[in-house]
Length: 110
Image (cartoon, helix red, strand yellow):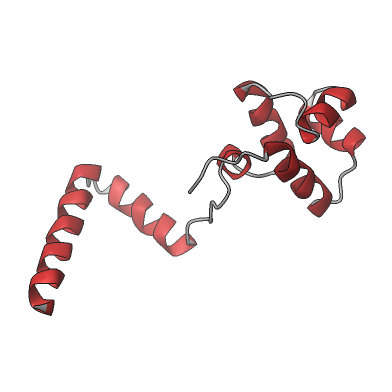
């Protein structure tokens, strides 16, 4: 995953894919048309707060704007992680399990 150096182009592409014109997205995000336009043409770098507003208006996570290749997590994985959390399984426990499985699989492959 790399930081998106073409943030404005990403926002414009997402805006167009949603069928929004500049006026509609700006209104939905609560920013001016001219400000949105300057972001899309990369004359202005938006604050984190403005990025949150734009992402919300586009219905995407902020990470989708910031990073070039963010793929959504498979819903089944999301559900498994949610269940693990509800059961009280800690992140470190999962990391330990993954480390063990990696070690076991590498050892068996030899």
